Image 1: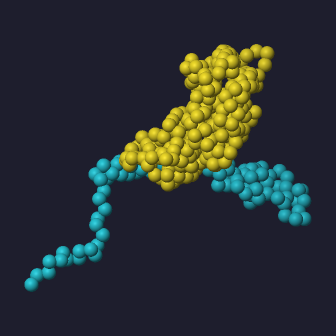
Image 2: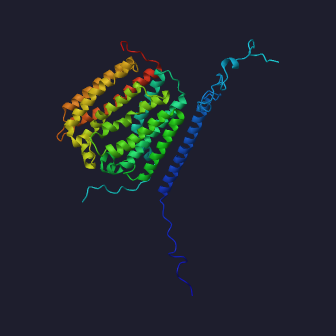
Amino acid sequence: MTDEKEPYAGEFMDAPHIAPESIAARKKRNVWLGLALFSFVVLVAVTTIVRLSNTDLSEGAGFYYSNSDSRTPVGEAPALPPGMSEEQAAPPAGLKPDEVPE
Amino acid sequence: MTDAPATPAKRYATASDYVNLMKPRIMMLVVFTAAAGLIAAASVTQTPINPLMGAIALLAVALGSGAAGAINMWFDSDIDAIMTRTSTRPIPSGAVPREEALAMGLIMSGVSVMLMWLASNWLAAALLAFSIFYYGVIYTMWLKRSTPQNIVIGGGAGAFPPVIGWAAVTGNTPLDAWILFAIIFFWTPPHFWALSLLAHGEYEKAGVPMLPVTHGAKATRLQMLLYTIVLVPLALTPVVTGLGGWIYAVTAGALGAVFMTYAVRVFLSKAGDAGCTAAEKKLARSMFLFSILYLFIVFAALIIEHATGLYFAVKGF
């Protein structure tokens, strides 16, 4: 005796029918979306490269180094310790900048 | 039987549907006026700008304009389906689902603002973000369906691009930038109402309180004339501040005279009234088309003067 019932009949949903036009349109959209994402990545990369190449990264010049006002700008003498006068901090008389005392 | 639009036939979205979602014709005008602000700022303040960064800043403006257009189409898809002029747009025609348009608008808003910040500065990026918010939320969601002054106040959104372009170069927005803003602001009502005189039946059907619907065609023609009277001398103020030279002065003066002539002729006509003639309808349409040409050429004169070194100051100012 054979079972005439189709195996698993009615147990699974039919696969949805997707029109070929719909698949083609979706493929095209995906290609455009991919291109758009790629363009965005390229744009961000190019912008970053150009901005960084135009930025002076030396200390005290800005960007990474001058965000904090507490830093002493380059070329400016640091603040004297409490109690020390300008005279005490001054170099010995007659000392030339390039001379190292022995 | 109801007047509700029939369910649109299913069709598959193409790339051009997504381009149309960004309102490309408005985008062109937006990018052009932003370029005018950018070029004028670089020339007037002698601030050099990397050409690539300038191009990316303009691309950001274009994306921002497209984002605002997509958000507008998402929100207005119900009334777009009712009006014949807009019923073929991507959402009412069934090509693009509403949620996709919203997602596209929001993602592009973020991308455009980020790109602008990367390529220029935070002020230009903030102004771009605000202009998208202005068009997408203040105008589209609030003003358009609630007041006949919708396009007057909402016109501010379209007036931002030259200010954004200026800020992208200098990091600030001086008087000259706001003069360019004011020119577009006062240009918008006569430009848009010239179109709505022809299409007020459609707006009425969709329940949009455009001025010709709420106050009639006669009041609209008067308002168009008044705004044009303000616009024409205002368009000459760049000559006073030194932003515009001889080429700009002659261009803005001559085109302003033609614009004023159109405004007076439309005011004296019965365009938009029930019994208006085909010639009067044609006159309103001509004024609408001329207004687009007017803005393009006036800003082109600024670009030519500042980009090519053909700036010759008008003595006495």
